[in-house]
Length: 209
Image (cartoon, rainbow, N blue to C red; front, side, top):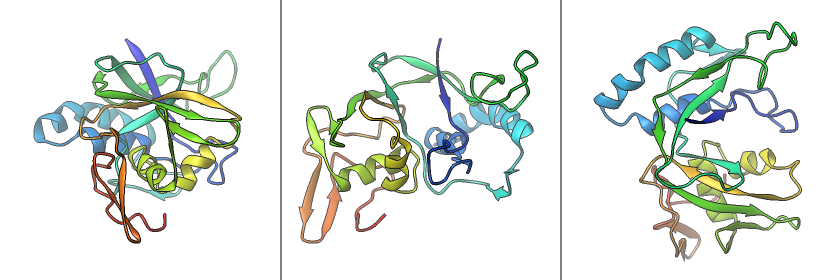
C-alpha cells in the first residue's frame, strides 16, 4: 500500500514555520461526512489524540473550519482509483540517530486506506507561472486550490513552495466533490464565482484572502 504523509507543522522556510497545519484534522473534516465514516475514523482519531493531545504547542484546536480535500505532490505516480494509507510522522526519538520528526520517528496512521477520486497535473515554472494541466491559472483559481488543500489563504500555499525553483507534480484528490474541470471560473463584475472549479464549501466571493 502506498503512503501519503501529512506535515503537522509548516516547514522551516515558511513565515509560519513550526506552527501547526492541522492537516490531519482537516483531512478528517473532508472524509467524515456521515455516521458510518465517523465510526470508521474513530480509532484513528483516538490514537492520534493520544499521541499529540487536543492542544499542542500552545495552539488549541477542536474542529477545523476548513477541510483538506487534496494534497499537492511532486511527480506523477498517482492515478484515479489508487489507494493510499494516510499518515503523519510522530515525535518519538529514533534510538539510532537520536533525532525525531520526518524520516526519523514512527509513522502514525490517521485513517483507513483511502481511494483517490481524481488527479490533476500541477506545475510551477521557473518564472513562477502556475499551470493546472495545460492551463495557466491566476489568483482567483489559486485561492480555491489553496482552500481545498487545507490552507487559510493562497499566500500560505505559495510560501509552501517558495524554496522550489520549479515544480512538476499532481493535485491528488480524495473527495469526489472537488472538480477542477474547465472552464474554471466566470467573472461577474467584481465577484468571481466558482463553477465546476469550486471548493466544497463554495467560495462565492473571492475578494481578499
